[in-house]
Length: 328
Image (tube, rainbow, N blue to C red):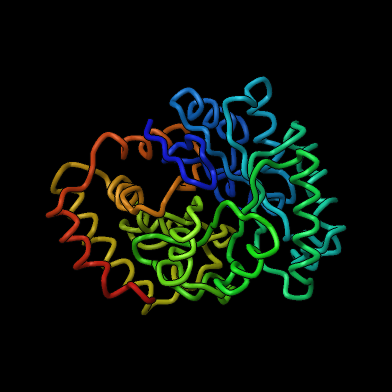
């Protein structure tokens, strides 16, 4: 296993992490036993970074992580989130970073995870109806009470990130980032308030923060799962809500680029997923890649990316393909 440390989180974190969004349901092929088996396999292989959130299946993901880590808590660095709260009346998930809601959410998360603390809490999305000062007060309580060891921001603008860092120590950033979405301003039905390379990376470098990219494989596009006749998922799958994977014009542009990248990987006998993860791993700002998995087989392939590295010629070829997508 390859591990990375940062000034703000001076611990060895596995370069490949386990993302658990799929554990919460809303995707095809849901299998709790396989999810638990996958986490156990990852721990045995040296993975310690596990990312989850109460939003994922209204707590289902956290419950599965808790089951998997029973008796193994000391092997994992658990990162969860606050700020997206399910409205059980059917109204979806609200943005809520009030002090009361944060403290309530964390207590429920700890119960589901079967632990009295988590290693890292990210603010999942901004809540512009609540002052940053109130949110920071809640985070300070969590830190002083020992319910979390580190604090991070996810999907925050650079301006709000700097403001929050003036109120409380922030140790990490999390944002959407992959080879074809390096500075994108849109994701599903969200207008993002940041551009990762242009605005988040400078903050990460300035403060020595950890950085955890999510959607590193573009929801499967950069794993080669769209090459055999278009969409491979059902209309009920989460990916059906991503316009970039359903809009004909944009989709074909991304698909063509992914096929070219796959050709580069094929020239050296490697799968596209490993090339994609390798490219991310070599970015100096990236600490641990939050790659969603649903099976041991998928995780085995991901871990295979650690056995080799991109050379200068491969990086040159990759840059030629992905440069037109730098700001898309």
